[in-house]
Amino acid sequence: MKITRVQAFQVLDSRGRPTVAAAISLADASVHTARVPSGASTGAHEALELRDAGTALAEKFYGGKSVFAAVANINTKIAPALVGKEVALHTIDNQIREIDPSTSRKGLGANATLAVSLAGAKAEAHSKNQSLARFFTPTGNLLLPMPMVNILSGGAHANRTLDIQDVLVLPHGAKSFSEALSWIVAIRELAAVRGKERGLVTHLVADEGGLGIPFDSIEEACSFVVSCIEGFGLKPGVDVSLALDIASTQFFENGQYQLHNAKQSYTSAEFVDFITNLVKNQPIISIEDPFAEDDWDSWKNFASVAPPHLQLLGDDLFTTSQSRLERGIAEKSANAILIKPNQNGLVSDTLRVLESAHGAGFKTVVSARSGETEDSWLADLATGWKAQQIKVGSTHGSERTAKWNRLLELEATEETSFAQPF
Ligand code: PGA
Ligand code: ZN
Image (cartoon, rainbow, N blue to C red; front, side, top):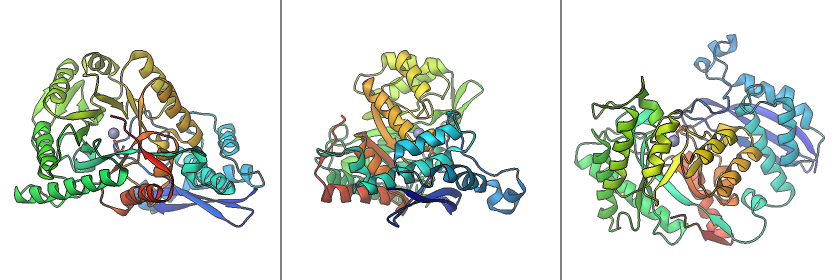
């Protein structure tokens, strides 16, 4: 089926900031729209998110955060190359690569390229009468991912009420996706009640819907979440384990890991010991970005002493980049990668990174951003790509529940299995 129109426009994300939307129209008059998310604790090696800061237009709109240039790149550079062509993700991504061969998508902006690439995947799926998840897994059971869900937030997402970015939970003892989600909702509700009882809730719901409860130490925050798991009658480490996103690049300053709330500062070697003790003392099954994005030595040193069951997950380290993943595989820096399509800029290249990771025995976690939209394509990608894990933030906020609800819909309407990555 032929593409008849490609039209981009600016919309708002969950933080009220502008982001890019692209709509692809097909010959049957159907329209397929995708909106791109945006991070706050972004890695230095992510593909370029094109914003208008510094231009006359930017002074007028959204304090420099507008994305009119990215929208214009779609409407004037990408659209003419696609209109009239048969719809196919493969063709669309190839055309974009031809216009902008850089892997950082610095010519067009990764927010522009991803919007078109995603809309293209949705449009091709439609042309084949498939859902987006089925487009990537045409036959057999769909594999619903294990949710990794935010309970406490700190760092850049919650005014640094906690030094690290998130304390999350992984309900790996649940038998189904819907059971897993129901456990998490209960744990989060209990955390809100207990936080209030202790006078801790600052009424801050963080960017990803987690609770911004202040804690002086990471251990204290972990113990609090463990008590909430137990409070609901579940066994920590058996039914539900902790996952931390340390997001340490955010507090790596002048060669030191500076925990401001804990009033402690560590060298790289000391921080490797600190993390080693932390995972020994708490039921932690996954740890993300424990070391800064370019502190490769600490990653390698920790990986060589980490417990084998621990998922060592690179987000800012890898930024969904093929070359950085390859270095991490060669150096045995980690054993898992966070997959964020907007760090990369194209659907097909993101899938290639995920497949390379699986090929090397890495686990994969498909992830949303702190600035999200009401789109649910991430749920379909995680499922169709057999990622086995998904990270969307908390259970609050329609931009988060859109993804959970899409997974519940797939569970109810398709033949599915529930991933057991642990
Ligand atoms: P971000 O945070 O979207 O602000 O980068 C998410 C994460 O660090 O995993
Ligand atoms: Zn992260």
